[in-house]
Every structure is written in C-alpha cells, then in structure tokens.
Image 1 (cartoon, rainbow, N blue to C red):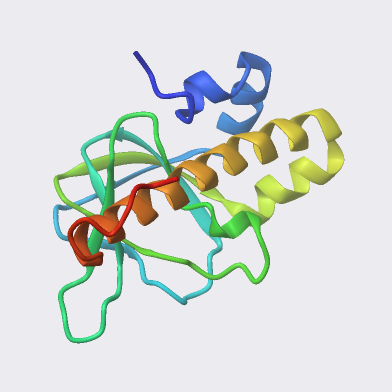
Image 2: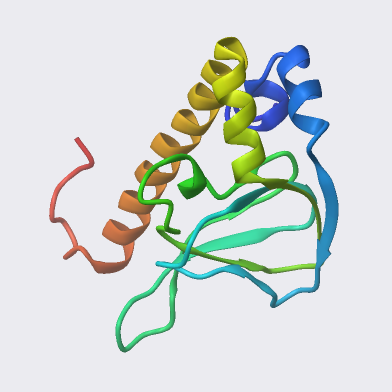
Length: 152
C-alpha cells in the first residue's frame, strides 16, 4: 500500500501530470549529498528508485538519520515555506534515480492555478507533518531517557 504522502497517492492525475511537465530525470550515486541543512532550498525531488536518508546535524556526533525515503516519496519540502532553507540534510543511501523539479517554476504554476496550488500545498503540508512527527519519534528514541514518557 502506498503512503498517503507519495506523489501518486497525494495528487490527482490532472495535478500530477501538470507537475510532471516540469520534471527532469536525475541520478545520484550512493553517498551523494542532495542538500545540506541551512542552505537555500530551490528544488525538490521525487524518488523513482533507490533510497535517500534525511538526517539532522548533531554537534559532536554523526548526523542522526531521521527517516529513509523510497519510491514515489518527496525529498525536500523547505522550498515551499519561507525562509526557503533546508531544515534537514539528505544523502543517497543507494543509487537513486529521481525526478527533479525547479521550485521557482512549481511555485509560479501554483500562483497561476489555485486548484493546482492547493493540491501541491496539501501534499507538501502532509509530508511536512509526517516528517516532523518522524523526527520527533526518532530524536526521542535516540536521546530521551528511558521511560521518559509517551508520545502524547
């Protein structure tokens, strides 16, 4: 079953087809950094094959992997929200083939067509909420004292 946040599940075919007009096929070797936390977010990707790890810089330690993304999933949401800076880092953990999108062009399409813009905003919002939850769970798992309480 596809996650509700994958492009195929989240966007109606008319909006998906419109978005795909801007897609550019790219590939990344395992170990390639797609972006770094705090840098300008001007593009995003949808994974076709392979996996991408989202990670968070932890001073004095290796980056903490928050989530691993696969087929159909959105890599990068920071392009959609000011100040347009990556909130996490991302690295290909296997060879990755993806569709790459220019954020500025997508945002222009969103401004021109309210229905398309709403569909993209709802998709990105769902992804953002899911990722923030995953980050919280992972960081509690890594750093909270044992028995410190539930997730509610």
